[in-house]
Image 1: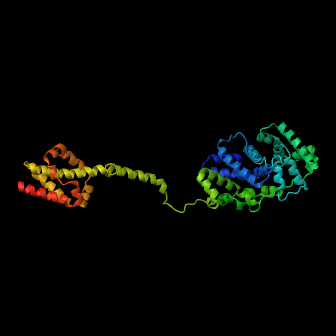
Image 2: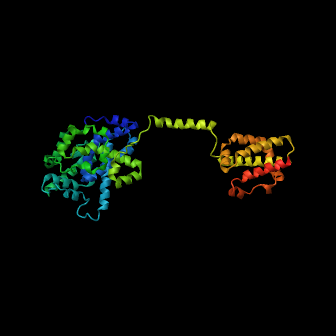
Image 3: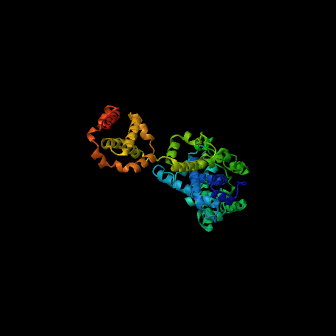
Length: 183
Length: 258
């Protein structure tokens, strides 16, 4: 990503039909890892993450021509990835509402069904703690804890005030701590 | 990017316990992930040369969470491939679902065309159309009309010659008869007649009609021609020499009169 072209350059190239595809590939390559892990932490399963990511980039392809360049590509992509992930989770929740009675959204169940899952290990407890959070707090915690995203950028991604985000992160971290200590 | 220390300090304030936890990646991706992605076959080799994601950044994240290198290298191609599938339409989508291997193969054309063929094709066709419009016979629209008109002329020539033969007193009569006899001799069989009709040009027909239109008046023909003497249509079908015989008969009658 360090050697990736600047967003402005990629967006300019995208406007040119001759370099459109190349520019789009450049955008994917530049952001795919960050977005993949953001999505993966939200939907847990790799296949789901892959589906969400691909659908998300397809929407980016369709919407990039109308992208307002006064906003940052980085935050725009994160917003789409987040929305796509939440839409996917909502669909899953609706589909599995009868079968999954023990887990609120089935994501904890997905974690537990992982072949490497070990309930005694802290890293898995942390993940279960994250899944125990309300949706918004889960996203805020992930973006801050893993993506190390500044509140200012997060504010643009989630269209929420920085103050509210700070409060969300605070509550989330406290809840996770309690979850780990009590499980 | 906000300094890591700042974020860490913030977490220490909220939860020193969490701040001490190592950020271990619990997630994994299947080995040989690319093998289950048919779209990955349709890779753009040029894009594969881009090693943006094989550098230190990837190593950093990979140390945090384990992902096969190939996954990120082909992700962009995989997404582009999906976009193309969508653009192509439902039939391709169906084929991608039914025949993933075939659908994943690049649609490469094995046939070649001459250089600049498509660039020049339209101009070539247009120039041919121009030439044709100037010089060619208009066949399609008037083919039927032309045939019937030619047939009418032949019939007219025969009838007129008969007319002149039966009433023949003018100086033109001999010329007309000679012309008719000459024409009739050329069409002794249906094949010859057909060939003769086909050989007649539009201009010849039009000129003939302009010149002889007045004497091809139906009333005049019907009044002066003994219709009963003319062979019936079925006679032509039964005996291909009917026309020939009829013409011989006319010749004979003319000879008697003269």
